Image (tube, rainbow, N blue to C red; front, side, top):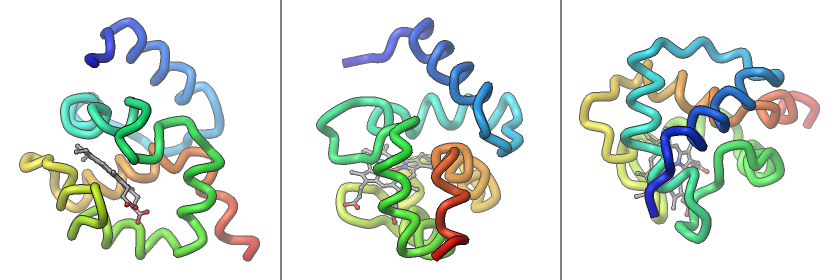
Length: 110
Ligand code: HEC
């Protein structure tokens, strides 16, 4: 199932309006929508969904560094670099911070 551009725009606008601090460039926004959202915005792919704070909070237990490493090297159904051959590690960091959204704050309390 493809995500309609309108739904995608609404999704991203909704998230950016919240406590998301990650500064994404328009290029990174493209990378995200072309490479990550086919799984991370689609139910039943096994991927934690964009905006699903609870799912991301659970993942934050292992720490941001580990999450980043897993995303670069691949973990379970997550392909190395999320199939994003155009992404640099820096892009990955920014995209992941964006996906973590509000959940990012949680890890620090533990
Ligand atoms: C082919 C589908 C697919 C694509 C494309 C994909 N992901 Fe994932 N991703 C997954 C799945 C499935 C998981 C859950 C893996 C697990 O824990 O078993 C995951 C997990 C993750 C995690 C959590 C890793 C952890 O350690 O818990 C992050 C962060 C992530 N993806 C980021 C990205 C980013 C950024 C992109 C785009 C560059 C991307 N993903 C593209 C399927 C995908």
